[in-house]
Image (cartoon, rainbow, N blue to C red; front, side, top):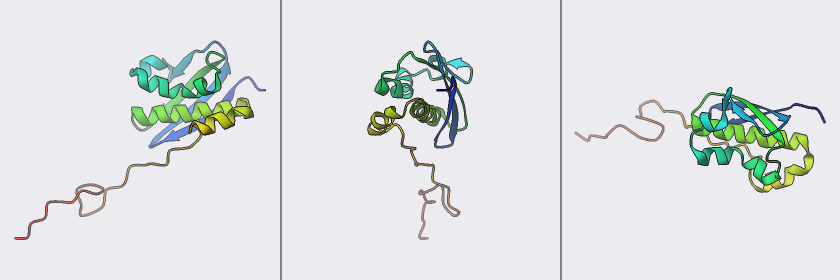
Length: 129
């Protein structure tokens, strides 16, 4: 097993490059503590769910660089990156992570705006006369 494991996670417009290093459980995102970068506790719990599923809580330090998108997309990208890195650490983690739905890349993207319309689906108000 190598000392540093790298993986990439994506969600919406966000891309996260995640490094797992054996350590004491320090988690940083873009150089900040995860609780500061993602201030909502529920978001932090979602990001760290792969560690709960595999019971590897404080065995690894996480260093994530994430860019693009908003906070929700970035959180999902980091979560997928962590899950993929854990599978690289130990292949036996694949089954529980897959059953928890943590290895599936969420394909939903923002639909593009169409010409002659106000948005992707919304139309301009129709006037008969």
